[in-house]
Length: 168
Image (cartoon, rainbow, N blue to C red; front, top):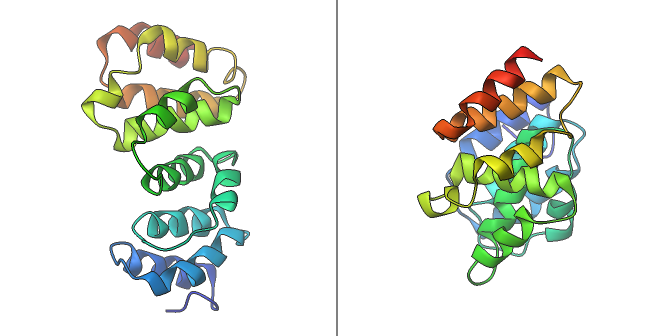
């Protein structure tokens, strides 16, 4: 399988194979896939880049935090987190308080998918309600995404809110 040619499926397969490999020479060819038109290719490329120790186009990765696809946004955030120089905790706290709602959602998604127990403690029911209440009204897809994220937190105090999302 090839990264710079072939069908979308072939590229995705190649990225799956490279998912656990860490090699500096992968950064450039995989990084170029962040421009690919297919969301799944970009998401898988981000997953590969999370494991690399080379200079990334962090500006492009930051742009992908604002992606419409929540999974792509979370993977971009996690990639930035993994490549953060120093203690990323203050950066994560800043993202949770960011003006851009996409960054707050990506930070929460990161915590749900990859975060430590200490990071999960940063999320309480009031914070989660304020994050999801207004931003995900109206769209069934977005409400399902919110329910998926909230349900994976395993916080009993969010149960009522999950019921509200399901009813709407």
